[in-house]
Amino acid sequence: MKKIGNIIHNPKLVAKISVVTALIVGVIGFIYINKGPEYEFAEAKAGTIQGSWGLSSSTNNLGQNLTLSFLSSGIIESVNVKVGDSVNKGQVLATLDAGNTLGALTQAKAAYSSALANYNKLVKGATNEDVAVTSAAYETAKTNLDHSKEILVQAINNSFVTAVNTTNNINQCFDNPYGNFPQLILDGMVISDVNLQNKIEIGRIPFNSMLSSWEKSVSGVSVDSDLDSLANLSQKNLNSVASYVDDLKMLFIEKATANPGYEKTLETNKSMLISTRSSVANQISALISAIQSVSSAKTMLSQSQASYALKTSSARSEDVAIAEAQMNNAYGAMQIAESAYNNRIITSPGEGNVNAVYISVGQMASPNAPAINLSGKIVTKNISVMIPNNSIIEKGGKYYVLLKNGGDVEKREITIGESDSVNTEVLSGLSIGDKVAIQ
Image 1: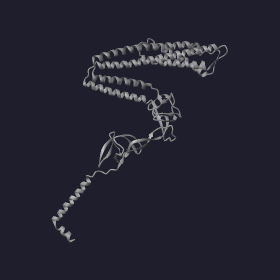
Image 2: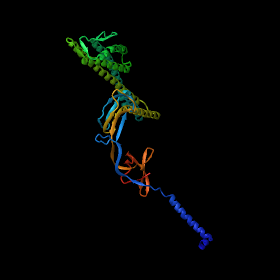
Image 3: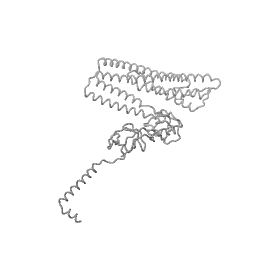
Image 4: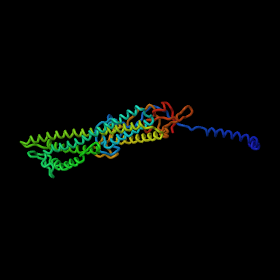
């Protein structure tokens, strides 16, 4: 106590002790403040990840079921599987009718091709030889379109003539075919399907009306007419004619028998209907071919016209900027059209089995409504390099880890693959044995 009192009454000694104490406290505080955070590290290693959708038909361990749906609405065109079928990855299971999506995609591709050509022309410029070539191609495309239109005009006329010839042929099966009460001539014949007979007789009146209206529509058709509308009308009406003849064929070939003495009449009807139906089918094919030819010719003309305009124009910076924007817009529109077209297809995500099919051809599909149910399992994937999920930092769509480098840590960007609830596959940026900080 006496020593402590001596220290207290010695100001110089107290000052020295205070300075030393302050230095010690300062040093300790500096070390504490500047001490880096302490990390727990995990080692990158090889291993397995579970949870991928595998769909295996060779296992009884069905760990997953997946119900697939159409992403858009439309008429179901095909259903290619049934319950119990095995399926492969990428296999087309069902489709919707292409409808307007195919035409929209074709137009979008043509528009993008045109915009791309225009942009390239402005950027690169054109030689005299290029201009001459594209000019010749443009003129050829116009000639081809005119020729295709002439063929389509002829196909439209021939379609109506085929319908008239078909009508004249089937008239031999009717009594009073153009009257208010057309009746089938069935003397000496026995019909086993009265409902089909009534359908044919009642349907003859609208059949006649369709022919009359069709005749007015195609009268005077030329290359300057609305060929798209007339071609579609002709195709629709030809299909109606084909359907009507099919009903007659079924009646006389499958549902009719002849009493003795009338066999020749029945055979004559059968032979006529088979020949008539074949003629209608051939004309439908010819009409479709002509329609497709005009469509292709229009696309070629659009492309060649755009190319010619591109070759003969001069480029300014503002023109290039506009062309680039148009190209990007056209590309975006094409992607949207491709997405709409692809949304009409259901494909299998892997190998597996069909558990249930909720759809059938001809139905109207609704977006996201259950269509096909598949069975699969939880599969195991061998991974070359993987790390714990809680060691990964995600920022701005990119992935990073804090990698141990001697006594320090450094931020390292990585590329990731598949994950399960514990680990994530590393495709690039790390090697086995690297140590990463747990967050």
